[in-house]
Structure formats: structure tokens, C-alpha cells
Image (tube, rainbow, N blue to C red; front, top):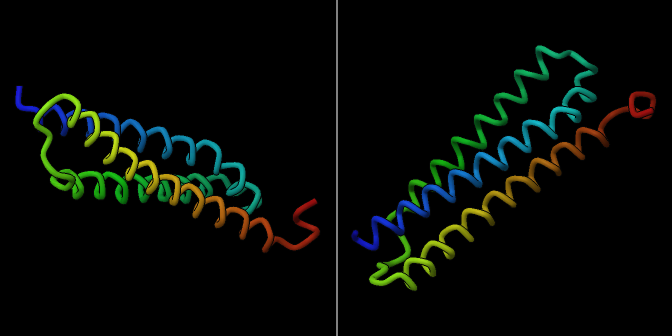
Amino acid sequence: MNTMVLTHGWYLALGLAAIVWVAATLQRRGLAFLVRWWEGELPLVASWNHLLTVGVYLLHVGCLLLALPYGGQATDQTEVIELVSTKIGVVLLCLAATLFLHLKAYWALHRAMPAAKCS
């Protein structure tokens, strides 16, 4: 089997798994912040939560696919591992940046609440 096919396969599988894990975590754990901010208006909260999750998927799957051809050629198994780990490292850094931006937004929502709402 061509080593680049193996490289791309592992890159896509690991990258998509990481994206699904982070998006599911944001959707599940961010819900409490949104419920609190929107004072329990569940249809609105569910809609916002879903839209944020779709945005995470679109952004990161798009970047994952755009980055597929970059990074050089792997001619043996060692180079496959090195190339995949480098590319997955970039994906994980991008996911971490998005996670921290979400946390910052949730924290800003929390801080913007009047004192009476926070108790």
C-alpha cells in the first residue's frame, strides 16, 4: 500500500475522532452555561447549542481537509508516524484554541449577568 494513502487515512481518522470528541464535549458541557444565561429557555438554548456545535464541525473538518495535502511525503513507516503526529498535533492545537475561545465566551456571558441573576 502507498505510504501516503496510509498517512492520509490515519490523519483523517484521528483528526475526525478528535473533532467529534471536542464538539461533543462542548455541546454537552456548554449547555449548562447557555441554560443559565438564557434563563432556562430550552428551545432557544438547544438552538444556540446546536448552531455552535455545527460551527465547530464546519470549521475544523474544513481545516482538516484543507491541510490534507500539506506536510511533505512519507516514504517509510517512520515518516508516516512522524507526518501523522505533526499534522494531528496541529489539529489538536486548533481544537484547543477553539475550546478556550468557547470557555472565554461562556465566562464573558457569566460575568455579564447581573448580580441578582448569578445567585
